[in-house]
Amino acid sequence: MSLTIENLQASVDETPILKGLNLEIPAGEVHAIMGPNGSGKSTLSKIIAGHDDYEVTGGKVLLDGVDIAELEVDERSRAGIFLAFQYPAEVPGVSNANFLRAALQARMPEGEEIDAVSFYKDLYAKMDELEMDRKFTSRAVNEGFSGGEKKRNEILQMMMLDPRYCLLDETDSGLDIDALKVVAKGVNSMRSPNRGFLVITHYQRLLDYIKPDVVHVMSDGQIVKTGGADLALELESSGYDFLKTA
Ligand code: ADP
Ligand code: MG
Image 1 (cartoon, helix red, strand yellow):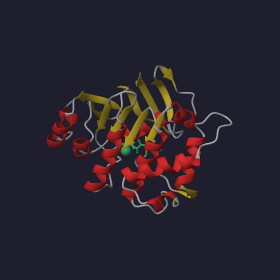
Image 2: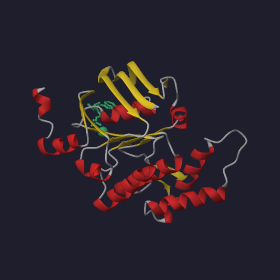
Image 3: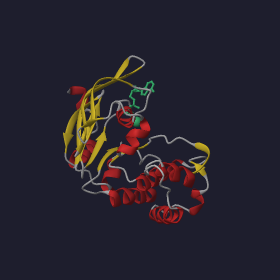
Image 4: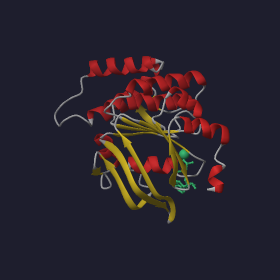
């Protein structure tokens, strides 16, 4: 079982962004992607989730061996893909609780109704774990949330939806150290042999709390280096200068 990217090529407005990217995330593993701004990290995560700004011009995204290219965003979500956005959208007029309830309802078999009591019990337990005030259940999704509150809310969604493959795009940016620890605790509580993670980050700091099995460096639309957790430490001290000479 794995999320596998094979020779993925993609463009936006005819400009190539991903240039033959290969990546395999077996279930049970946490992979981190680091790399300079503009190398295509967010593009990769959005293409896996099914964002329609991007034209896939070659290659495959395989979810447990099945090509998901033809699936719509919601179908990919129900198949087990989750993306925590670098810049989470605000959804005015839809309360956080109703949003999550609708998302979970959409996963249930036709004719079955979500149980409100157990839904709220589960929601409150997860909010407690993320140290989120109960008032966030009735507030509109992300509307007026601070940067850190939005990121915590992305993790709440992830914990409620129980996805098979979790993509986290710079979830650490905008978080102070205490919030970072809380978010990492949420992620770590979800680590499981049945679930894979792709954690995109600029900073080694996050990886002190979410220990990756594998670290990749992305540059100009490709994975250019892969190593263990210590590769992130190496990058922290020496930066990405090696990319220029490579
Ligand atoms: P990263 O997340 O690694 O910083 P991105 O994936 O956000 O990189 O961006 C890679 C490149 O693709 C950048 O040059 C960016 O300007 C461009 N790009 C990404 N998305 C779009 C878009 N929707 N429209 C135009 N250009 C885009
Ligand atoms: Mg990005």
